[in-house]
Length: 112
Image 1 (cartoon, rainbow, N blue to C red):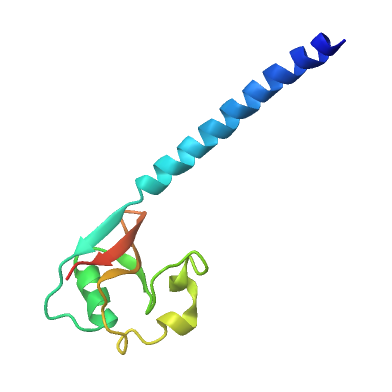
Image 2: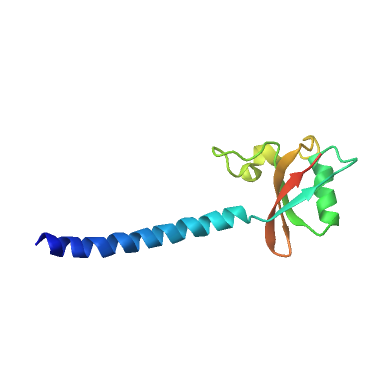
């Protein structure tokens, strides 16, 4: 009887492993290939000016945040208290938010 139990158990484990492995590989590929735009900005001191620069390059739905994304707050660009006054928030090196171009959401990075 134990052979019967194991014969059903092993294929089930193999199938589960394949499904879980494929899911992990797919998620890793999506994360590794997240679209981004890197800008080397000069004479841009506020996020309002950064947003204007992005608009002039064809970006829309620009959401910039005064803090970078963290595991605890993965989307600070969605928190209005962090995005309300872009004219007062200085551009910082690294991630500043997200924008849309040609229907695709991209991560906005500033390289100083």
